[in-house]
Image (cartoon, rainbow, N blue to C red; front, side):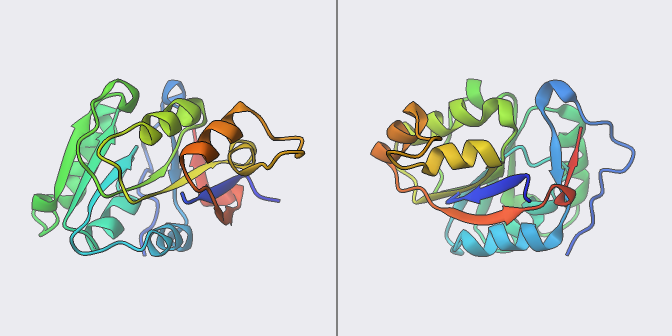
Length: 189
């Protein structure tokens, strides 16, 4: 059984010693194979500007920075912003990383080509709709959601999971399930 699904939508977890903030629904993606899988499925281009929501300690950020022109990382927790800044400080990645501190739902999104993110459950629905309504259009989003939410995104008429979320999302975008993620790949709050 899996805990999360990635929708179209090697580093160790360095979050040791950081207590996650339950109010933010924080969970750090720690499995390097899942991180690499998300990056690979994103079909990133060297000219891309990538939006990463909730970069945490930067496990995926570093992999994104290897592939794109720029990563715009939006993080609500100042402690994790400090960890991310430390991680890239003095490296060639430092100039390619722009960090936005704040709530992604209350932030005006900048221009980006692609969004890659591991999404906290409590902001899944509002974030999906914020992304779908964002202009100018972006090429793709590869997002990791809790299993039940992802199943609702891709549900078809007649499925028991089919709902308003399914209808509205599928009216505006093509949605595909890309990967299953086991619960032990994520460090939860």
